Image: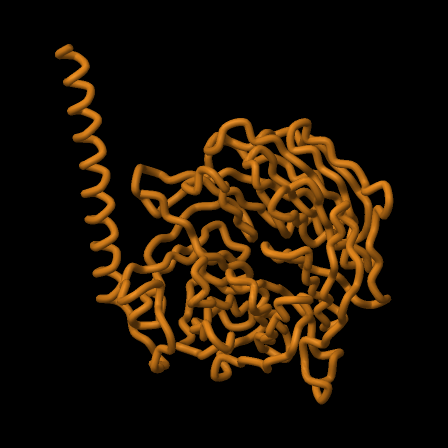
Length: 403
């Protein structure tokens, strides 16, 4: 009986220590960030922050073709960011993706040519925001890997190689261990693969091939890992010169949104129960008065509540805002946000999980722009633009913190 009591008390002590450590680390980081922060453009906040008076910082990861990434703290009460940690991620790191069930672990692509690499990232110590490469890099089986997706099951990683259109799938046996150095499957189905995406169930995979003007459609078996072209329609073709780049899916309906790079358009798509995409609507992401040849579309995101869609424009240097019709999924333009002139070649942007904040990575200015999202209207309000220690910030995302 006594050994059992010892184990119970030991377990309680460990749990209490972790709770206290969590609180201490969070408070220390918040104080550090608040001591450093300077908001160059203060603005009145509209709506809530991350909750009723919650000042807990949000954590943002930024990368930009360097051998490190930066973790920033976004302080809701200030609407500004400050650098906290520099993490080693290997050569020319770009896209980072978090494991869905063990969010202390991430994976990143090293965007190299003619052969890219994939790396596993894990914390250097418990409770640390700093992470490092775990094990050896794995080949991406193509050049310039530009996107990485982890399957919702957490068992597979999908990589898109831009240079040669090669896509690769890797098995993830244990989150945190180095990703397998041998791809589970390799395909070459088009030109300039720009991402691999899936819906919440993960049984269909979609790859926009920018240079081929279509989206490849696959069935995927999450048990066996088998990927196969959709028998009824292996591709969804878009208009010539569209340049499909990124696709996102509504969580609450059978609707998707596809941004076209060279066409500067956003397509609203219906998603059939059997996986096929079909076109519902085409809208420009820039005003009619702007010269389309001077702009390229980059990224598209849906607000967490599904009510708004946002697209980034490089050249017009803006975030296009759209309202979503709840019944049809169709979009209505709301306008553009320019970040008080701070948005500059916005290759990447991210929305926090609650839907209060947007951070934009400005590839043309070595800065990030912080925007507040109005929950009611969906409109964006610029809070400020901050310089980061990256020459070409090309990726940004809100980082889950597991303490």
